[in-house]
Image (cartoon, rainbow, N blue to C red; front, top):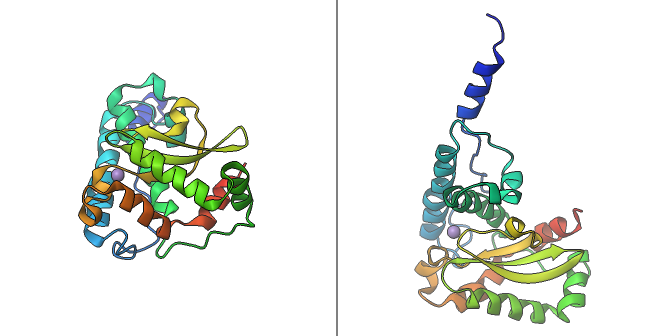
Length: 211
Ligand code: MN3
């Protein structure tokens, strides 16, 4: 059979391209900050749902690497924006956290940059919590690196800072109700505060120094 590039392109375009990231811990391992039921719904229902929908929306269409799609989101409609953001944001989020957290190292590159930008770790923590609390409705709060500086900002829905060229995520917290309601009810401040005890600071530092 001769190689037919047109047929190959059609097959390629129809192949699901986006897959869930595996978790490096068990669904119950973040408990009590994130209980097993929340992790199960969040990972198996919400996260996999965004991926399934994204693959469906882009069937017969090019499927670039997810970070490229996110950076070029203006070329796509709202459905792709929401589901691609949901996929990418959560893929990042599962790695921002680890059972019991990893110790914040004030002598790491990220630790020094946080002190430079926010005066102290607590200055940063307060700003992150306050920004997450102030995001009206569903969204995310982020620590980003932009022009070699750190900034804290929030995004609505499943938007990612890269969609608006607003910096590269170093840390982010999901402030959708599905992320915390089973543990914290409507108390988003408590969720954001508890989130600090499961942050994977070693991973965040690796992201910070990686460019
Ligand atoms: Mn979520």
